[in-house]
Image 1 (cartoon, rainbow, N blue to C red):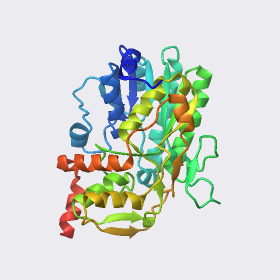
Image 2: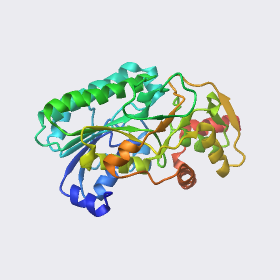
Image 3: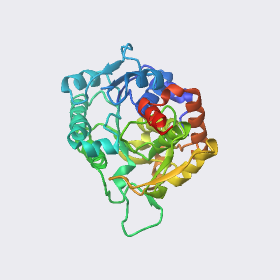
Length: 350
């Protein structure tokens, strides 16, 4: 049976969960849900990916909260200290921007590889306490799937991986290393491969091409053209962040998720051009502009969700059309979410 609010409360009240990357868009949603269910959450992260106002005003993360710990997951002493209190660990900290990882591979390796190893070592040393470790991975590990196929591919967890970017390589390594270290330590673990995460309160970063729903909605809001990288022919399996948070918590608790790698997706393909059209439903004057396909940007595919639904007895509930409408409404009510660099671009165009 799916986990109800009462089930979550019964399972989590009195427990301590360490969420690395707990200040980020996904981590903050996971943290909020866990706290609502009665868990104590130690949210750990550098909080340096966005301006301070984004964390406080959009993500609801406040450094004055004693359980919000500003620090580096590559700091062994810090990881030992926080893991000492953990009943569960959700490892979501990462340089998660494909373009940023491509520009600075060493920074990506320090966080996504070295930081992951430091955390795994801390968990291994505390193995009698930690009930489950959840490693947050990505559908980027699939790359373009089978290069001989040109249709929309559905990826299952058993097929060979084909990462196309530094970011994807670090996630593939993290999955394998989690199993290597924690199997030997006899610690329960699960890797969750997120497909394309979107939804409020997502915002964008200058120089990035990730988070297409946020990019297009924000550009349309400001009267800027919507960029169709590669003509918008790529497809994505879009999963709303609230469904992502729910899946992550289910993966942390469900007995069937032990030592599993799970796709977290909807199984439905939506092209980038489809997203642009959904955005234009809300901003009828929006114009489209074709752009080259960025380096490391896969053509995409959808999730085979059969293992996820069997292990978690759960599936996503928010459709892309509903999620886009929710995001647009949130953006209309949260004008402060529009970053200054986009406002400047709109002013220059005007």
